[in-house]
Image 1 (cartoon, helix red, strand yellow):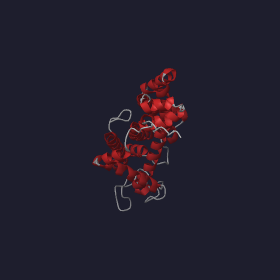
Image 2: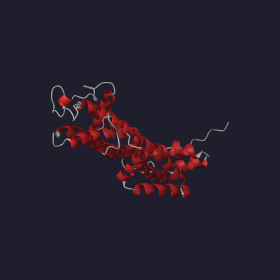
Image 3: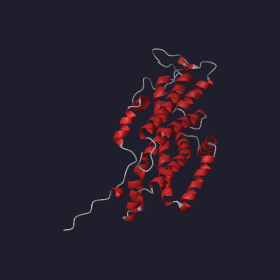
Image 4: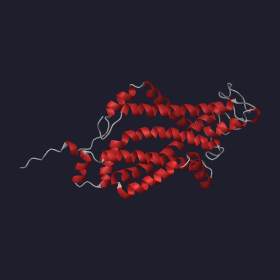
Length: 296
């Protein structure tokens, strides 16, 4: 009986990082771990707000409008007497879900197109690359305003606009990473063995470019938070009575001469969230390290 030949190491798919090593390096980064803990706390607050808040976030008490922090309202009230703490909690859900929608759309469209363009190259790569360059050259805020203006002001339409703005970034990163990985020995071996293109992309290429994509997702989430807040501030994002950090800042800004307090809590939430997402991205980047084709 003929013995089976051992499978060549070059034919086996390799991932660009070792999860155990990456986890140890990340856990050694106090700043990155702290950022992750804060993100998890924000997620918990968002989930809790769906079922419980100290006060009904839409309840208006005009006699208690623009009050400062008190035992009844820990963070005070806004211009129509709504509890700021309750609205901050509900706005956290709005921010995180809208961020997930925008980044999810960008990943769902940008990554597959980047895989195809980077692997096939040629005409498809050139065409998609030109479209990406055009989108990248447009002023982001004006482009988002144009999309929302065409589709109508709403949180969903604002997130579609932000997702479209983030697509070229994920596309270009995926295309460049795919070009580097496609020439590796294990990809060549899979291609020579008759493996289909879709299987090569899904089983061999995508796992090896997951590291930079994960880092890009964290930075893209920070961009989505800022963009959603900006569009809501302009009245093109979340519509009343939906609570949003951007719209809360706008409401406080409009009453700045009467009482400036109501503007600060949502502004601080925006700054803190964007900061921890950026620090989390830095921590992941340092833990993964600069890699190409599975080598450190």
